[in-house]
Image (cartoon, rainbow, N blue to C red; front, side, top):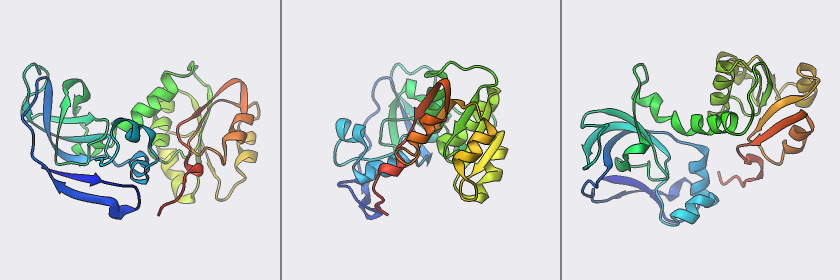
Length: 249
């Protein structure tokens, strides 16, 4: 099998394709021939060498990748929910940039009807992050006002869709005009285009009483103002610190 391996931090040239022997299938494991992988900003951080859990749990060399889809090739003893030929998607703590992978059964899921291999490979990481932010950290009340930074990105777009399902009043922020229609199609009630509008002035016009939930992926550049625009008892959720990281590109 083949993997993309990073031996030390840096630019794209650090991504190396290497050959490995495929191990025998282990008990309770599902072997997947990978069709598609999801590429996340966290994978870039791994390549830069600034992703803490990558250093703590793996170190160098490392194969990035948190999500994938493919076809089950083999199942180990004790696996009950999958068989060869099943179309699946899966989550993994690193190792997704590969032609094959073996994972515990609990990390593998059947692809629902209507969801393609391509789409399902990019589903779990962003939606698990968005679900954790909304469902496990705040008390959801119908009609709550939610401000979402970077709402056209991976997690941001998942948050918009979940807000629509939960009947929350979502205000999405984008950095480019061409993303406005995307955010609206994903369910945003309002969209602030900060390339043309004063972000915080417009945010105050939309919700002068402040926001019940603000989800911020930027970090230093917006964190203080996000906090200042919370309603009483509002919650500020940080799911990234993009503005604090060095641009290696």
